[in-house]
Length: 87
Image (cartoon, rainbow, N blue to C red):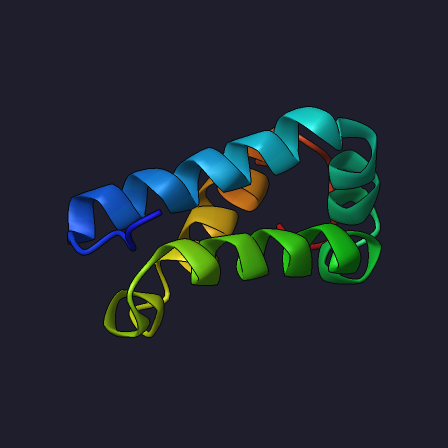
């Protein structure tokens, strides 16, 4: 499979991976946000997602942090309705 070479496709992939993490790990995400421990609770899943993203995009696109941005947008910002010490 050819590597993704466009920024738009890399963003879409990052957001799709983050969306899947959110969808399939809703309880962990809520627990992590509630207890301000999202990155600890989701460490394994986040690293799996990162590895998948890195394996599918060029090194130049990987370096632009699209995956980390998608994680913040989808796993954190979209859960702003959850009571947390973070906000």
